[in-house]
View 1 (cartoon, rainbow, N blue to C red):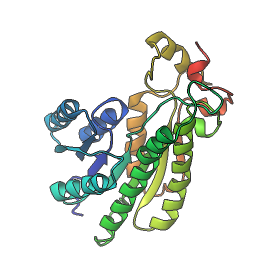
View 2: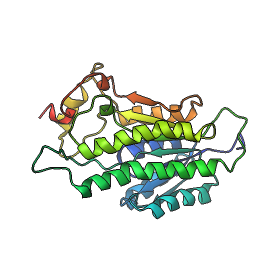
View 3: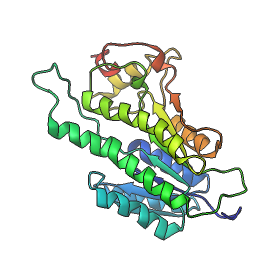
View 4: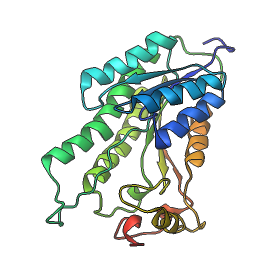
Length: 265
């Protein structure tokens, strides 16, 4: 890649919330951005427009991450538009409550499969597409090595049975991250990025979120800006692969038998 040519990042789930923050941060840093969305077309177009207003280039692309053909097409469309993708950030995820012991919210095949397709299968398929794409280029002499970044979760260090299907899918993605680092080297890096409680989720009130956000050794967990800065750091840190960066104010150091959301209700 020419030294003066902008790099390109594909961010899944970039229309809203954490994915949007990451996409904007890369845009501010001068990257081209592929803004993926599932159903939030208006928000995705708005995010892409904001990035363009920053002086970078962006395109919003729709794909259902539970459809293999659409997942593969998403990557190809991004490549066709920008010519190359240098960083893939799998931010999109399903986060629905279930737990095997809860009679009214038990694990079902439908919910489990939905979590697996979106949170595990799609990231692996996209990473696989990126590896095949990157291998078509000669290795650059600069200090940049392409990377795929998987958004994980601090709770993987201290497991609890809340959000069972979600946790199971993210645990598998953590393992896949390490396996892909071995399989894709030396062409493509594979890194995990694990936030703490970063944004209100589900029926959580703002007050409950703020209380939960303080249950860490540092007295605060991660902000969307923290995660976006960490993602850009990983993208540019060529020696990081096969590991996970926990950005959570030390939340993962505190063991808990329940998800932190239930500690303050």
